[in-house]
View (tube, rainbow, N blue to C red):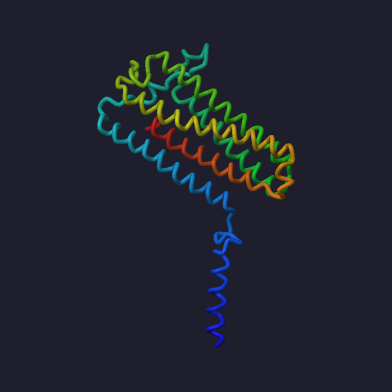
Length: 228
């Protein structure tokens, strides 16, 4: 009798979880949807990087060396300095730093600290803008050297490198730009007390997930184009 009662109670508990009154995953709907979006976006980036790997292995004899393509600092007056990967390392540092400040913003959100959220979102935004500015300088420099989606520079020799580089880094840059816009909206909303009125800062965590994803993807882009 007690066994049957226990089974019935468990069945009722499971049914209640899926009745819409509470999330069966103990996670908010918005956060689950963000994870779904990030998983789907992972497949998109993976497709680009698989295409990169396929073309690279097919043309391994002619594939350019990253230390030659990215040998200079694309800043006016510093182009003559031959310091391979220094500039892109700075770009990577900006994203890593922005991940830390984003974590701190999420922590302050859990504490319902409006000022703390804004305090750490501002450097996150500035790092994102700095990264995009660096990417603009790098693209401008490479294009001036002759590398485009249809032409090859003296250091690249083949057009496929430029095609893949501009498409993949451009697609990632669009994600960074989107993240910067979202973080600006987040900072303004937090400063205006929007999340204090709703009683939680879950939106900070959701956008934080997106921002960390963008930073993580850059690690693979950095590995493929600048190191290997």
